[in-house]
Image (cartoon, rainbow, N blue to C red):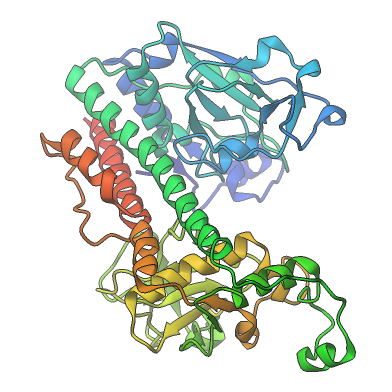
Length: 490
């Protein structure tokens, strides 16, 4: 449901009242106010049971990138770049000698980005309070006065819904902000039905748990690959040497990082692996670019956030996460015939991101844009394709793909350089073990509406791969949104 309306036409009086401002956003109005008034007659405001703490403007002069003898600093980006649970990746820390005790977080709370929700999908995140953090400016922490966790999860679930995001309309020019008077107007219905509260808590906690499991599976994959390589080396020793004329002539490039010590060291480790190695092309992988989606190429196109019959599901590199999941899916309708992607194909972002995913389900038309490189396994080995995607992610983390790439703004790893991607010939059983951490076809998706959901979900989490965990998260988010829709529209 949309709670923000922008009129198609305005009167000359309205134009004059807005100082002849032709910006469409200046004339938007919130139908949500009426919804809030109706709901407030039935439900108290949940936020009355919370108190908030706004962050402190720490001086950039004391920032450090080292976690040693320092406390992680929660900034806007930590909220905006997380989903339900606070990410453990921090870029800035405050030395302990400079901490402000008042802004030290050490118990469960909900963090809100005070930049507003108009242009940010993620404006809130759950902080477990199991570690100590410092709160930076333009982030607000909400604590439940009675420390009841069920209401924390209820709060979090509502902040993910458009009903709440529409209330978080930041004001200002380039840098939008939510001010104190805006915070005082925020409203979330205080649900009193215990079954509803318990249901929302169960689903929200399940999402948080699965987000953590995805990160765990991801680390396991990277650790398995690195451990196998380092523990199974032939008795040769790596010695770094500067490139000679012959090496430069063979490569035919100067605009590259393939001559640096780090690249040569890891390339040596792959080639020195006791079971051997092959480059990506010699191994049997080929490639194809996605279709250019420019109007002069495909003609008229219609974009949609929801699936419509006959539309293509569009997977673009910018929406691929480091875990090999898709953060956002869009759909496109066009008379033009787009190149479709098949099960087992790897979608690789060759420009800047170098992130990749494997197509597991191809029961409908899936396409990518020109920046999405389709890596095709001519061996028709599904397990090998999944393993290769995992290895490409390992190579991305080691910056090997960046070394191979050319150009600025993150680099461009074109298919013409794929022969430089050396890959290890892991034993079949190890490839299967790694692939299973990404996708386990035996993991049965639990039904969130089932009375046995808690037990089914526990069993599912024990065996599910990253792909299945992500599917379940998306399903749970949809269920939560529908439930909140019902509460708001009742």
